[in-house]
Length: 274
Image (cartoon, rainbow, N blue to C red; front, side):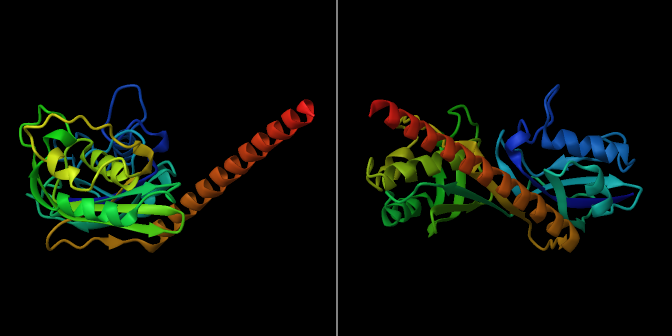
């Protein structure tokens, strides 16, 4: 039997998160169902099936990682043919028997903020610098976390056309941690808080609840491992890009239709008031 690691991409909109659950659609559930149907795995324990981490409902990914052992050859596009179009494998690499995907070297999240013209990028960047390094992130997750100490390697805030991209990189993150970090940056950018407020949030003696930003704008961009290089499949990447483009057109059309309907309501109401 050989052990393989796969890079998984998915559009999180129609999933109830990554982790498998009873009676609801999840990314892991679709993967396991497909791998079993293709007889690549049978028993999850015997196959040593493992994941690098879970994402919440609505969160998307380009680089989540799963590993398992199989007696059969793992061919990316054969699996993708059997998977739904909103979850696909982009890359693979052989790994040694003891490889554990949870122990990644780095995780990269990107949060997209729309309607950002009123936000102060410089203040957000300044606030982001306070997050760098090892800190107690008790206020950025559940207060019951046994180990709230996390190290953040990078926080960047960049304006990209009508969007602001907040990139956060580190070895590991707590539940809701990134979305709560972005909430603080957003409040700073809106001039609701000073950038140095991050220092107060990082003091575990201060109980300061934070409402996380919505999940649908968060993307797990990549999970990286030292001395491990994934081989990306060009056809698999092209096919998933095509799916994303189709979704983009669909949502653009929906937005234009709804805007036209709003304009129509405004027009009808203005005529009645004349």
